[in-house]
Image (tube, rainbow, N blue to C red; front, side, top):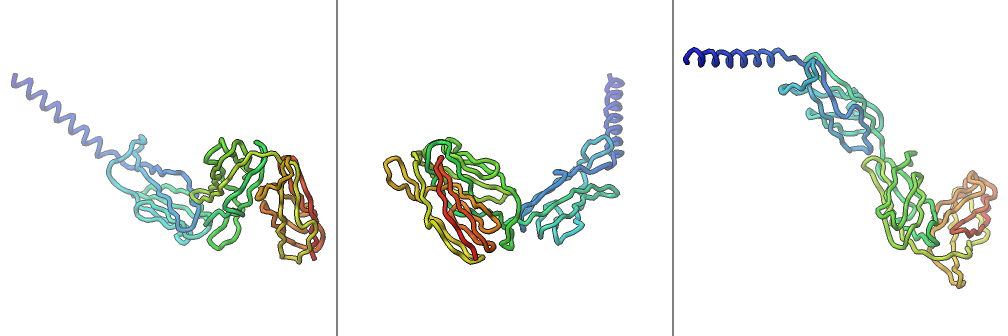
Amino acid sequence: MHFRLRTLVVGILAAALAFASAACSRKPASIQVSPKKATIYGIGRAQRLTARILDKKGQPLESGAPSWSSTDPETAAVDAGGRVVAKKAGKAMISASFEDISAQVPVEVVDVSSIEFGSPSLSLIGPAGTSVPLTYRVIDSHQARVDIPPAWSSADAKVATVSDSGVVTSVGAGTTNVVARVGDVQGACEIRVSLRTITRLELRPVTALVRVGDSQHFVLTAFGPDGQPIPDAAAAYHSSDPAVASVNSAGVATGHKAGAATIKVELAGASAEASLLVN
C-alpha cells in the first residue's frame, strides 16, 4: 500500500516538474497586434491597440508586456498601454516590441472636425417617393472642406430613407433624423415629411445679377391642386453652368466667373427656372 502511494506521489511530482519545465521552456516567438491597421478620424481622438505575445505554437504567454513606440509621435503618439492619440493629419507606424521580437501597425490620421449641413432641418413636401439631395460639408480642424464621403443613415426608414450620396427620399408622413458619419464624427439633419400633391413651382426672382463671389437666394414657392402656396418646400436645384454659378439645396446660388447660368428647380415632377447673370 505504501509502495503504491509512493509511486503515485512520484508520478505526480514528475508530471508537475515536466509541466513546469515545459512552461519555462516556452519562449516568445511573435506578437499579435489588433487591429492590424487603424484609421483615426479627428485630431485629438484616440484608438487603443492590443497586443498578445505568442510562443512558436501560437499560444499566448501569460507573462510579459510589450513596449510601444511610434515612428512619428507628432502625427500619432502612443502611450505605454497602446493607446494611440491623433496629433495631426498623416501616417505613422506603431510598433509593439518585446525582447527581440516586434510587430508593426500602420496608423493613418484623417483631420475631420465636424459635418455641417446647409440647414439643420428640411421640409420634404410632395407625394411619397419625392427626393431631395442634402447640402453638407465635411470640415477639418482648420475649418477647410475635406473631400470625404460620409456614411448615411436614417433614424426612421418608414418616414424617409437616404442614399449613399446623401439624397433623401420620402416614405411616409412624420419626422426623422438623417445622420452623416465619418468615423466617430457625425452630423444630423432633421427631415420633416409632409405627403402632398405638387402641381406647380415658382422661383423668384426670375432674373438676378451678382458679382463674382457674391450670392443670390432664389425663393421657391410650391403650389397644390387648390392653387394655394406651400411654403418652405425643399427641392433639387441645378445650375446649367456650375463653372459660372453653383447652387445649393437651399436655393442659394454663388457666382464664380462672368457669364450666365440658368438655375432650375425640380420637385415632385414639377419644375421652374430663373436666370442668373454674373459679372
